[in-house]
Length: 153
Image 1 (spheres, rainbow, N blue to C red):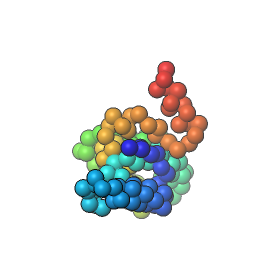
Image 2 (image 1 turned 90 degrees about the vertical axis):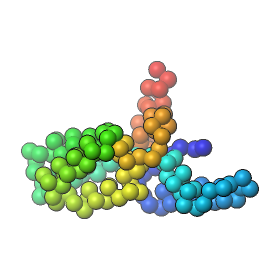
Image 3 (image 1 turned 30 degrees about the vertical axis):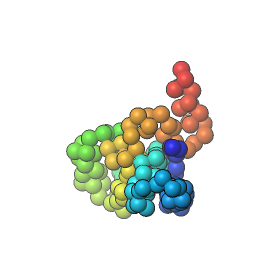
């Protein structure tokens, strides 16, 4: 099966899931429903962390949302959202962001939608950890190549 790093554009995700479903539905040995196939396809997708970091930086630079003196802390907490593996710790970080920076609500809600969260936040991912750790975390070609070099070294 092909694991894929994607940006967070709905069209890209939907096209991948649709192609995956169509491939398996046509096979005589397929015993899964479309819903099961969709879940299986989503478990093969990883969201681009660089897109999340860039989004975090953009929000951090809007001084009416994040005061300048809090920007570094905000970005660090957001990076931690990607790294924590426990649900309780993840929800604590979400609550911290919501409480300290309530004007990030629309932005944070977008990232917390299941179809985004399951591709970017380790605690929300449906991809197997051993698979996640063997594919790049970004669609950025240079960063992806660095990832492959580090795996070889």
